[in-house]
Image 1 (cartoon, rainbow, N blue to C red):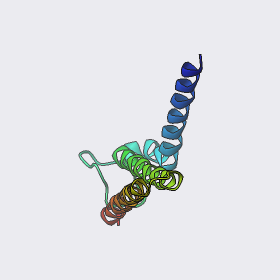
Image 2: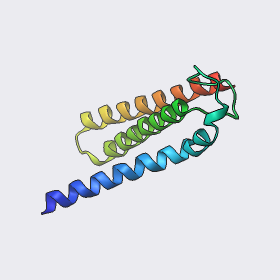
Image 3: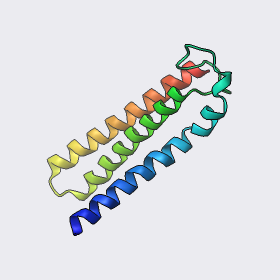
Image 4: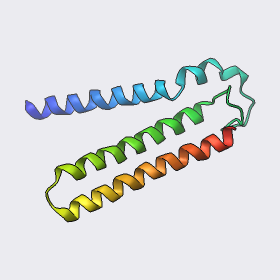
Length: 110
């Protein structure tokens, strides 16, 4: 009984995170401006129009960043120093990757 309940809680929390990240990444804006997007563009170099592809990319960026923050948090809760350094390094690498991809998309948009 406890295992099924924890799987349900994890499933609902993942669905909630995907929905929240999609809304915070501009899903509504992308859906409202779907007819204004020229054909064949994945990323439009204009800050006032957003495509579904950009929204998906922003959701992925948010998940990578959250993964980095979780690794940073986990590095503080382990007692082995070797594990702390590896989790700390991996967390900062994931954060830098998400920031780098975000700035790269911003460079294309502007």
